[in-house]
Amino acid sequence: MLTTNPFDDDKLREECGVFGILGATDAAALVALGLHALQHRGQESAGIVAFDGEHFAVHRALGQVGDNFSSEAVMRPLKGNAAIGHVRYATTGDTALRNVQPLFADFEFGGFGLAHNGNLTNAMTLRRQLVRRGCLFQSTTDTEVIVHLMATARGGSVIDRMVEALRQVEGAYSLVAMAKDQIIGVRDPRGVRPLVLGMLGDAPVLASETCALDIIGAEFVRDIEPGEMVVLTAAGVQSLRPFQPEKSRFCIFEYIYFARPDSLVEGSSVYKVRKAIGAHLAQESHVDADVIIPVPDSGVPAAIGYAEESGIPFELGIIRNHYVGRTFIQPTDKIRHLGVKLKHNANRHYIQGKRVILVDDSIVRGTTSVKIVEMMRAAGAKEVHMRISSPPTRHSCFYGIDTPEKEKLLAHKLSVEEMNRYIGSDSLAFISNDGLYKALGHAGRDASGPQYCDACFTGDYPIPLTDYEGTPGGEVAFLAERRA
Image (cartoon, rainbow, N blue to C red; front, top):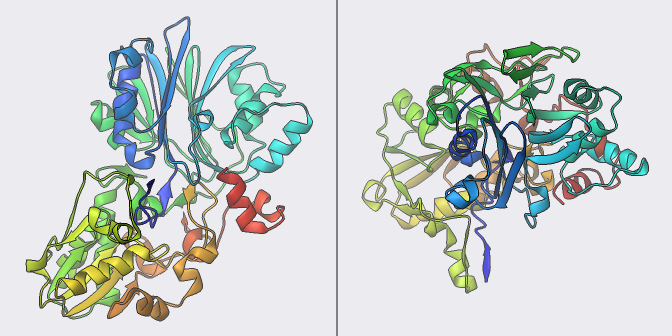
């Protein structure tokens, strides 16, 4: 039976990455490279739309970027000096080709491609209204709502239609769109999801993260501001501010886990921030031990910071097999329960007889934590202490991150001490909310106006949850329909 590794699913997952470039030879090839660098943001489908001055070409497919954009037969039709691309992680259930982005539509003004990172929290409400008006939907993505809102908008130009459409939506979005003579980038007014601007010579580039600029040799210029719309044309980069200003609430989990460590996010090195988080974690919850061991790979920078702050040696006590995908053969229940060893194996020499501190970025359902602690015990650890570089994840995300409904989150059901007993560790501690904010250079969390979106920890949702609040069955129904 071909199935999905349950231990891979015990992580929060970013759902998308976007990339676009205008005015560069072989633009689609550069987009493909950029999407390679953003592969961590979505591994289940990828797509590119290119424009050669007369015609649009589209290729969308299930699977990873390298599986779909490495052949001449695929890349040859994607001609032109303008292209946008998208990688997607499907939250649950089957991944359908109809949901792969960028979406493409023919408008009165010509062809239009749209790639979206985030989630709209009133998409179902708007969709029902549009269907009653006669709109026919081809996908189940919330992104298509934007396309239909543009189609029914009163404005004549692409920009006018986009502005009218986006003024009707709620939620988190970073968009990269393309019409025949321009590429458009937009962030929602609270700037929940990231988007950056770069330059490759004279060619402007938009990307979810700076690591995607690095791979093509582009220079990072700046972050697109919350509520900003940038229009890339042959004349240059134009900045517009079409939305009512709001207080910025950038997703704090980008620093903890989602962004690649070599990226700059909102002006800060992700790697440096993660080390600082580890140092604050050591200050708050240190315990005597012999060795600091990261849960690879996401726990590594925080574990280095913890080790430097505590003075305890850092060792790679768990070795990860990087050649295991998300899908593998599980012929029997016995083999299925050994699944975690496909990706992680104990480095016994650095564990046996030692008091171990394990550092990981989060605990979601807890299944991986249980197996990792068992692995340490089996390798002869004298003590196993678990330290987590985020606060407890007690609430679902509705802004573009795949989280289970809150009843399936271990921290929603159990106290920290109960979680400690559940995973079998000698002690368990999470960084505090204030400690997390201090690692980001603040005095602490401003409860009256938090500097970031941290709703998955606090339940403080900065953007209305229109569909959730108006849906029978509440959160479960919202998440189920969103993932359809």
